[in-house]
Image (cartoon, rainbow, N blue to C red; front, top):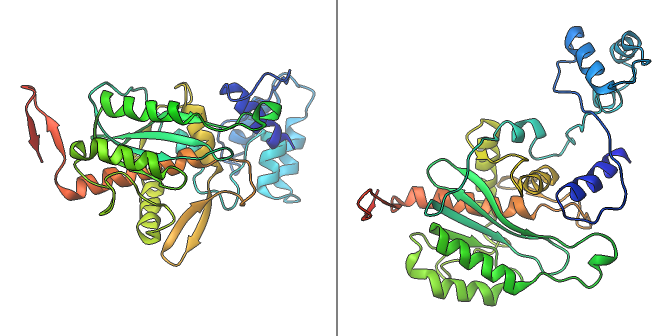
Length: 309
């Protein structure tokens, strides 16, 4: 229940839901080695805040008694959001990739798009080619409560955001999931085909149906997860306007093994916890991978000319 409250508060903190009067006050202990008594004591003291009547030594002895699972001890005594057994990416691994940086106009990027209509989120995410910096450019989500009744994403606003990104940045590949957005994707493909170095597929410069090509998408997912775990991916952290939203979607993803390896999905088909920004990031990262493997990436030199490498 506390974890559900945290998810609701997180959406308000992102500006994704109205202020319901909720006051959320919980101090999470930093990562500690539970086997180290000194670290454990420090974590308990950090989590208890000014509740100094809590007996630290009793809590330590309770944790070391072995009467409850490690994850339960972390939740109860350290206020930690513990990684679900089937969670795709651990919070500390994602947070460790945060950097202070920004995306500049004219940067060479690839784009990923995952669109919904009314329930699923619609997300546009960029990956900078030179350093794998992941930047969410726009996210549309159904509002919580009555404000969400009958809500549908503003397709004209989405189209405008896509075109703005294609004008502001040097977009060399753009992979968009075709589901529910076929007509728009056909138009984007037609309008920008000549500017894209790598095409999403033989039938479309932009369209990449995520319901097909399972083997390639599974390999792309494994590649991205491995890069996050090894710190080879960068993102702008939670202080960036959409950083909290991207983090929430990333941490909502669950491990979904298939015959080709490890893929991803929601907690269940009916789950309201969105993963669409991760899907868009995955498509952008796949586009970057294809671009680099093609050997056709172009970059402007100081004279403003274009060369290929």
